[in-house]
Image (cartoon, rainbow, N blue to C red; front, side, top):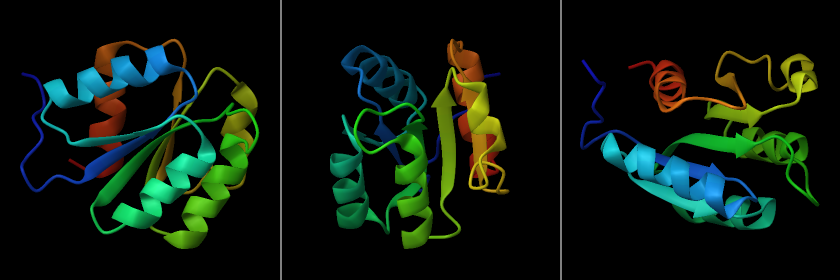
Length: 128
């Protein structure tokens, strides 16, 4: 049985610099009933978070963003809301040892991942 999002499930903010990756993640999340916000860089992601912070319950964050890195972006997000749920999407194993990445509310999803792995990570981090 596939997991389903409920109407009261939080919005998922996707921050990834690759348009194709954002599109695939967006499509998969919407298939499972999630509402999404999409950002192509850290600045846009932080702006969207600030504008929608009460609705956002999960951030899918690319660890290897150009410019402001995923590491810096994660630190900024957690400064804004310490209990924020985050899934770090990365092919870089060093993310697994970052001090912020080891918090209870942060999970790591290694690339490449399957749709099932993505949805399991989302549901696990949201505690559903």
